[in-house]
Image (cartoon, rainbow, N blue to C red; front, side, top):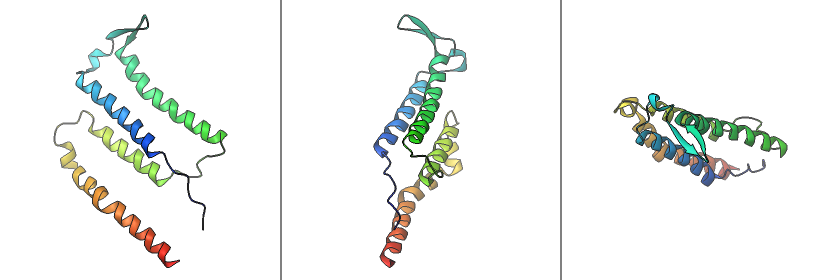
Length: 138
């Protein structure tokens, strides 16, 4: 039998995603518009623009991704392939990104509710059932 895969820290992944979602919601709730990019606030005596904050929000995340890649490499924990769970997170994040600023009804028209229902009521149970059946046959 193959070695069990390392366990993902799903609590941390949820916190990271929730933090990004909460910040994006805060941006929208603040009424941000493109014309606000040059608005400034003082941070530690330095003038910081809204654009500085927004650009930092996506580049910090991107930089963190590369730091994690480097750390995994140094720990001899490189990915041999992109795990299916990583693909799911990436695809769902991309789908969510398309809803940012979308007109009301876009998610409904695209069928998001059906996809969510599939995940919530079918996908996990089917996957677990198939794996349990396979292991019981061994």
